[in-house]
Length: 139
View 1 (tube, helix red, strand yellow):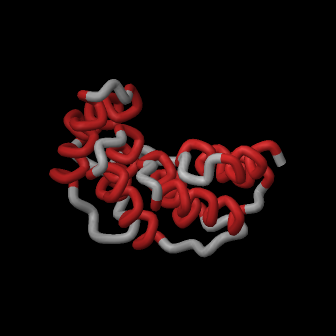
View 2 (cartoon, rainbow, N blue to C red):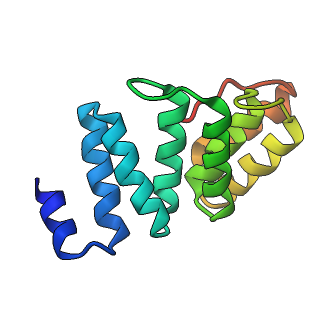
């Protein structure tokens, strides 16, 4: 309720729409979470793009669509969001929403790792050592 009241006063603040999406997400109201995240995304939130991708990836009380998840992760990654870079890498790594591409996975894990994402660095090391799918997850 507090998020909706805040949005009524400042509807252009993407942070408020994002927080409303998180509140809905935690309640399992994924259709409402999607709408709030979508508004935040439209206002420029890269973090909302990641969360929309996760909604599509998980598909709990929501449309499961790996191709859409991968697309949202790409948007977040290209917007410079480290978590988006990690999620996009996991899509390439684990063939989520398209063909596997280990070179692309390494590229995006590397970019996320350069921005301090520890789990990306760990996945990159596993790829370098094993040269195969790491099983890293974005959720």
